[in-house]
Amino acid sequence: MQDQMQDQMQDLKQNLSVGIDAGNFRLKAAYLNPKNSRAEVICECENFLELRESCEIFLGDFVDSCVLSFSENIPKREHDKLLLSAKTSGFDSVKVIDPYEAIISGIACKTALIFDIGKANSRAILVKDNHVREKILFPDLSGDSFDRIFAEWLCERFLLSSIDSSVIRDAEKIKIALSESAHVIYRHAKISRYDFERLIRFQIRKILHTLRRLESEYSPEKIFFTGSSCKLPVILESASQILAQTPEFHDNLAAKSAAMKIPELFANSSPNPNPNSNTSQRVRNLRHDLISLEEILTRSQKDKLYDMFMKNESGNSETLAILENLMNELKILKTHA
Image 1 (cartoon, rainbow, N blue to C red):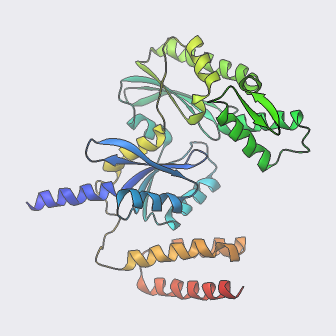
Image 2: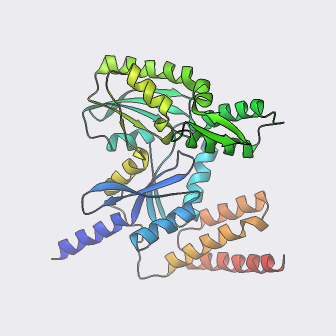
Image 3: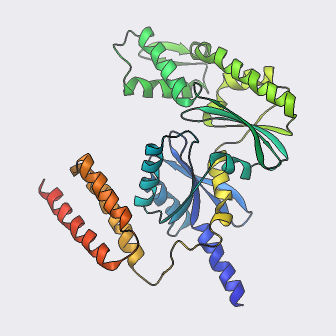
């Protein structure tokens, strides 16, 4: 009976962990459904705090641990920034996994070819017997590069002075809209799907020929496409012409695969070692305060404060009391600012 209760408690801890894909425009979270042992997407959000709170609403309880998948070529500074952001947003325990490890856990066949178009780059991965046999990065093909190329064309077409963030946002919105429609209206002019596709068609076909080489060499059981940009009609049409096998599109593969790693990575750990203590709630409150006070702090002050917080996150009540007093003083300053 006691063993059964322990198993149920362990299941509960796993349900309160989520898998997160941090390699796209927006963070995406998934959880492992205990009813069918399948990974399912919960939400996608702009930041970790919004994502954690959305997960807690969905699951109906606190979510304080996650399995996090990054892009493999992310700079260390950006890696550390994302990790710190996750921890200061309420994820007490964060397990970081290699993106290839994440994808392998989500593949249910012996040999597979995966083509993933992410925010910063795209990649081809050949998986055989749960090992990556070959991987190829395409740094010039990504969601960012599509938007940049299209933004440059918009500037030329509409005689805009420069490419700023608003033009890039417009390019992204038009790109998405053209996936569903043959044309859209922008600045009172018609823009066709062909206008966008001709800018990227040659590069896409070149990369798909690389995929065809991998397909011929390894004869994968299945070919998987993932990443929202893979839904672009020009990619799907070119794939049907170049590849011998029709790809299967799996949305949010990285987030779902990260969720599949939850039982393994949290099997012998407890995100909340002392549930009878109010320390966890005090730490959570401090994290919320940190985020809300960022606007009144300089970059140097924020760095020092976050560093102090990270070094003293052990749960020592005296240290927490010092931080709480500091936060209260800062909140007073903000009120009178």
